[in-house]
Length: 483
Image 1 (cartoon, rainbow, N blue to C red):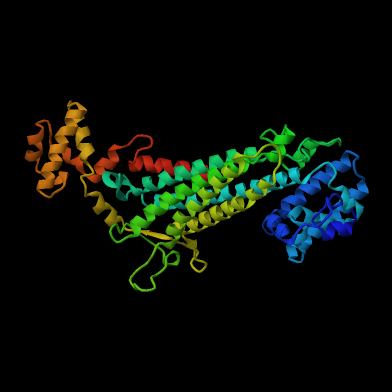
Image 2: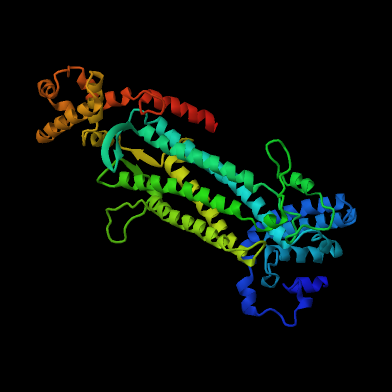
């Protein structure tokens, strides 16, 4: 096939066919208008492949030089927005190859030696996703830092801890925020795990059975940075699996879904806390919207939308799993459908992490050089809420246990005390000593320390506990970890 034929037609296999592809089928099967974002990975992979072909004596040094010049020109045109993306050429790979052939002549045609679009696209997606994972890990670090910044200012801020959305025990607001830091830290760990399995080279698997050319696949892997922690090249060991595996895309989307679930949980709390019924905090106006009919309202649109977008990402995970579940080996056209859900998952997660890092941590004011917070904490409202619901009841039970009462008996005794406090419409800490002693004679005046919110906090001074002393240690640990 001549270069003009490859340039004008997507049917690189046209000699076998007696009629051209219909326009309807062409539009239905084309992917160029969404997979063109892979162009940098495609060019990078092609350069490494060409270098290896030349090193192995499969193509000449002159051919490799012509390919290099051509790919540089292609890159320049794409970056400048002058590249002519053609639907007739179906996908990013044939578009780049066609233009390269125009620029480099026969050398451009020789680039495809020893590879297929099947292993080429698998390589491109892995290279692209590897870089996106690195960026997402950085964004997760920024969000964690923003949460730690707010936590550091609120170590002594008391809020009610909830179970079943009922007041349970008092906790430090900083401790509550650090729970999300732990979640996002695990998200980074998962991303690191996914990256390791993504960073393996399928190129050289060719269409499905490998190739007859003496390729040095390990050389290509090293060129592309597809190596393990010891610098050893990571190459797929089975050509059938190499071209058809999309586990890495599913794993990434699963990790992204979990990350979005964590964001959604935080979103739900921000939405509750911002409501007038809680009034725990305010979100900066730049992250809220008003109502078209109710002028008094400020709506937490960013957290609400993030909560909604979580369903979108989880849906992409289900789509990818469903896509793969019925495919026989090896490559099938179904796999073209992996890209749009994967691309949208990456875009959604990155955008959400960026906006949450700014919404939580604020932004730098160029005039003052100070960071303007995205959320304002109402510490008094939090503490007042913690006084409701008898949040220190468990502390009274613990107090009685330390006096020698079995925990189950202590639990029952405190239930009677709570009932009495409810009847008198007061907190446990407001019950007179003689009333408390009526429930158990061992109760002494020191009980009021354990019944206070701050006493309850300080008493939980074990690793992972909410005591301010422990929270300060955890903040220092996170600071050190995040750098």
